[in-house]
Length: 96
Ligand SMILES: [Zn+2]
Image (cartoon, rainbow, N blue to C red; front, side, top):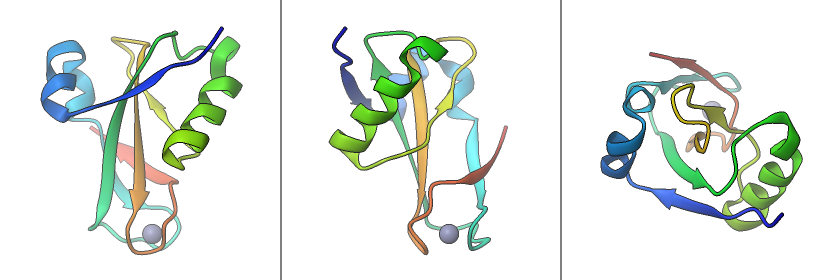
C-alpha cells in the first residue's frame, strides 16, 4: 500500500471535517510559546489507524519534514500537525 498525503487548506478541511478546524495547538510543550505555532492539515488515502501509523509517519517526515500528527475523530483520513516557529518543536498542547 502506497501512502499518499495531500496538504489541505483550512477551507477544504471545513468541508470534510468540521471539528478539526477548532482543534488547535495551544501551546508548545517544548518552549511554552503560544504564538507562532503553524498548524497544517493533510488528507490521507488510508485511514490513520495503527496499521498504517508507521507508514504515515514516514511519509509525513519525507515529504513535509513533520514527525507528529493528531487525528480527527469524525474523519480518520484527515490529520493535523503543528510546528512551533520559535523552537521548531512539534509537540503541542492541543485543545478545542
Ligand atoms: Zn516552541
